[in-house]
Image (cartoon, rainbow, N blue to C red):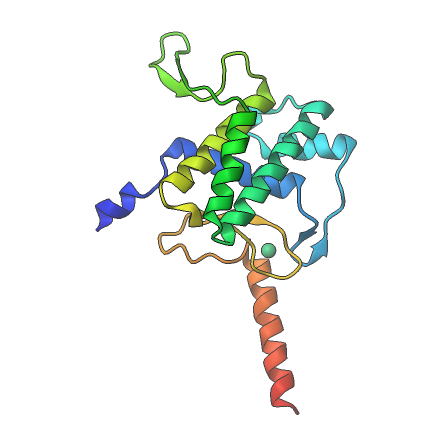
Amino acid sequence: MADELDGARLDGHHAMHLETGVALINALTGEHVQGRAKPALGGHDLVRAAAGALAPADGQVDLLSAERLQAVASRLREIIESLSRREHDEAAGLLNRMLADSQARPYLHRHGEQSWHLHFHSPDADLVQQWAVGLAVSVAAALGDHIPHRVGLCAAPRCDQVYVDASQAQIKRFCGLACQNRVKAAAYRARARRSGP
Ligand SMILES: [Zn+2]
C-alpha cells in the first residue's frame, strides 16, 4: 500500500514546479486574499511580486517579463480552478492549449559534464517561455497521473488563493490557518445566532 501511494506522488521536479506555479498565481492574480480585497499590481510592485514568486536564481525580472508572467499565472489559475471543481475535461483542454501556445518541445540537455536531463522548452526559449512550458508540463503531469486533487482553490469566502496539498490524506480545503479559522468562527457565530439568547 505504501509503495502504491509513493508511486502516485509527483516526482520532485514537477512538485517543485507546482509550488512555484501556486506562488506565481497567488502573487500575481486574484481579487481577494483571506477575506480582504487584494490591490491590483502594476509597475515595480508587479516586478517585485513576480521575482519574489520565482526561485532566487531567476530574480532578473523586468516589467515586460512580469506582465507576461502574470498572463501565464492567469491561465494557470483558470486551469487550477477547473481542477478544483473536478472539471477535468475542461482543465485538460486548457492545458493542451497552453502547451501548444508555449511551444513545449522536449529535448535532452546537458550542462557541461553533468548528466543528461530532459527539458520541455525549446533551446532558445526566454525566462517566461521556460516557466510557461515548465509549469504547464508539471500541471499536466499531475492531471495525467490521476492526482489533480493535489492543487486546489481555497474554500473560504472572499479568498482566491490556490494551494498545493502535500499531505498524505489530501484533505486540505483552505489556503492556510487564517481562512480555516475564519470559516470556523463564522460557523460558530451562525450556530450561536440560531440557538438564540
Ligand atoms: Zn484562503
